[in-house]
Length: 240
Image (tube, rainbow, N blue to C red; front, side):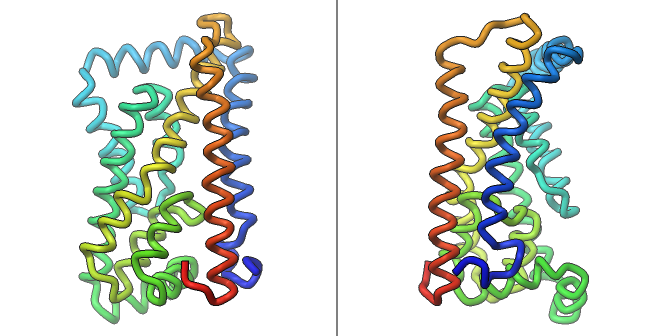
């Protein structure tokens, strides 16, 4: 059962992630009634538009990558990128940032050497736990963890670098496997922003945005269910 896994890998992590996404949308809707979120969002979007899509995407990508390198989960940047840049440019920005940090953190961990590895794992038990899983199941486990971030990407990146997993398969599994979660978080941020604007009376929700809200919930449930099945298989000794 999934309960036999290290706590960060348990199915409860999935429920927290789904609750986080739904909660963000609901809280933004409530906050839009009492806080000046509409003006703030409009201001941020105008600044991004003034910079142009390229610089704005690169700025969010850089913010995401730098945060991940110091073990700060990128969920806040992901949601903000979707809210400011929209679901597609926001997804691109987060994907670029996540891919860059995945490569850099892996190579940095690999460069630390055995002594550095031991010290780093000792200070970060979650890294040690994920490292053990990645060492046994390789790139397949990378894909599973990237599908839905039950363990922060920052932890996954360093943990993978502390294994014998080759860089090429790791990076390919990462940049492909993270796409659904990247899109999910960017859509959640965009949808939350639109709900906040609608709550403030600034911009009523259009049918496409209602569909986006439904898609966020459905995708979170589908990805969460898939990863939970994989965790159960892993706990039972089956290869994911």
